[in-house]
Image 1 (cartoon, rainbow, N blue to C red):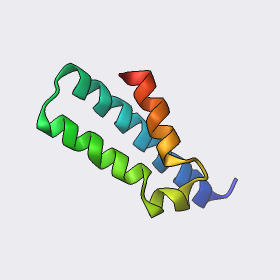
Image 2 (image 1 turned 135 degrees about the vertical axis):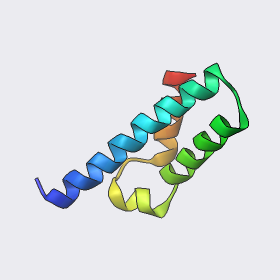
Image 3 (image 1 turned 180 degrees about the horizontal axis):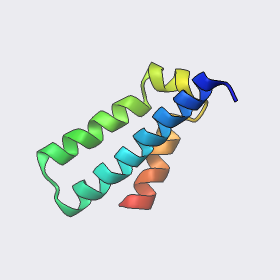
Length: 70
């Protein structure tokens, strides 16, 4: 596998882990800080940079992770 693709995959996987964690924090402690982190994560999943890293639809990913965590 191309090392650049490995890096891109690692970035996306870390973003998913962070988003899951932030969603769970927001569910357990709904503060402005936690809501802000979730919104920041969602901006990343909708960004052109995310689209350049993967072919996964960012909105679909957000929807599925929200179903899983909330």
